[in-house]
Image 1 (cartoon, helix red, strand yellow):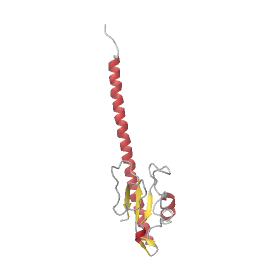
Image 2 (cartoon, rainbow, N blue to C red):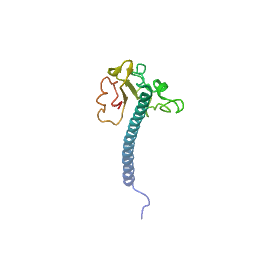
Image 3 (cartoon, rainbow, N blue to C red):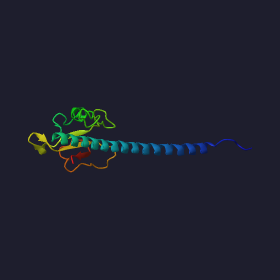
Image 4 (spheres, helix red, strand yellow):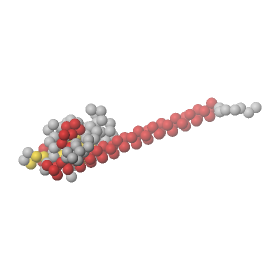
Length: 157
C-alpha cells in the first residue's frame, strides 16, 4: 500500500534547510542595514560640510564650537545653518544620525582651535560613528582630540 504524505526525516530536512536560509538572510540583511546607515552618515556629513562652507563664504569664518564641544551639535548649530532660502538658511534641517538615541550615536562638530585668526575660526572637523567600519577612518588633520567612540571624520576642504 502506498503512503501519502512526507516522512518525518523529509520534514526535518526541509525545516532545517529553511531555517539555515532564514538565518543567512537575517545576517545579510543586518549587514546591509549597517552599511546603509553608514552611507547615510557619510552623506549627512557631506551635507553639513557644504552648509558650513556656504556659511563661511557669507561670513568669512565658521560657527563657534564652544557651545557644541562634546555635545550633539544638531540643536546647537541649528540657529546658524537652518532656514529657508528667503531667510538665508543653508539647510532645511540639521540631519540626525539614522540610529540617533541621544547618547550613543550623534554627529560631532569641532572647531580646530589652532586655526584661530583674530577671533574667528578657520578650520573644523565633523565626526560620526560608523557601524560597519573595520578600522578608523579619520582625516589626518582631524584625529587630534577626537571624542572617544567616533571612528570617521571629515575636515573642511
